[in-house]
Image (cartoon, rainbow, N blue to C red; front, side):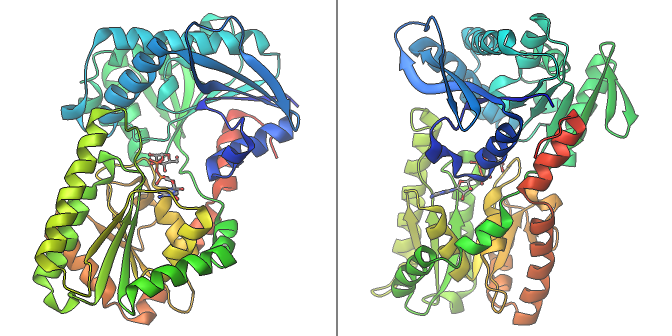
Length: 456
Ligand code: ADQ
């Protein structure tokens, strides 16, 4: 059996990083094949290191390298996070176009590829992750590697009209066509990619996932990512979860909890969500004093200007809504800009009457699935989910909203808060079944099977 070689911006070289669902899924596949994981060490050094750091843990070989300040800025902060991320999330208005950044992005793709190529052996399969490494297939092919290369995109793939706003769209699409299997989160993302190839590259969609393009046959499919469903359900009943639930319970004093949990990112629709909660109190005055909304959003990418602006905007909105509606003994909106342990989050999900998962665009959104798994079957809360999250394709039995339509979101939130127990249970049971059936192992096995890898 050949090895599996994973490439991602960050690896789980540090055992504590193996806690999340994705890291666990990749780690388990690598362990079962005696594989290798290649990526950025997370450190910055003055010069390009002559050699990567190489070490083995539980039979998995890690190959990680520092980036120089210039590489980190051009590849990671600028091109990946200020060009690809906004455009792939349909925020062309937030993209910063600057040519040298693409060179830095391409150079880091090439450098990581040069660490991988000499270590590949016949029978190996490569699995590249995410938007940081869209060019990796091309560089690996240039090095002479003819074996399978899979690629999974964790974020949306935009419609061809939006993708074409990326000045380097042609180079990127050609490079992506060098992968053997391309995985997308949703059917919509997959069809956007294929439509681009058909319209711009003379590709043919042969059906059953096969595309012929540039004289090659490649596969492109939707593989919606899942969570460790059973383990999350257990986490929600742990001691740590109970403690977190009783702490917030003391604050709520019998009021209903509406919860939001997101990395702080403009794709998550947080200002619109705050507006919708304000409209709930405005148009449904019977909810005043009876409902508290808590948004948990740890800052991310705070070196990027747009993320700092978002924080300021949210502070202003929460302040205004609390000023307008709050009372001596009631805070309508609470905003906690910090991280919580996964078991604590699970406890908060479990006690929430409703969860607002309303991104403007999201590849999948794992919070939606975590919320479902954390519920108490005797009294489940209600998930309100954006139609623009990849998760909406699988979780169509929940309340689906357009996050831009804030008045409607307020109405749907009211509906959730007043939904009879029987309806909540019926909807939840269907959602639970889907999240359990299509969990993280299902996702990994489905992708690796198409790549031709037998991994446990
Ligand atoms: P993200 O954009 O990070 O991931 P998401 O899928 O929601 O979005 O995952 C966030 C994870 O972080 C969840 O597991 C959540 O529990 C955790 N988290 C959020 N807030 C937290 C907090 N305050 N404390 C601790 N943990 C917190 C990208 C894509 C998504 C895609 C995933 C996986 O943008 O669309 O679903 O990758 O492919």
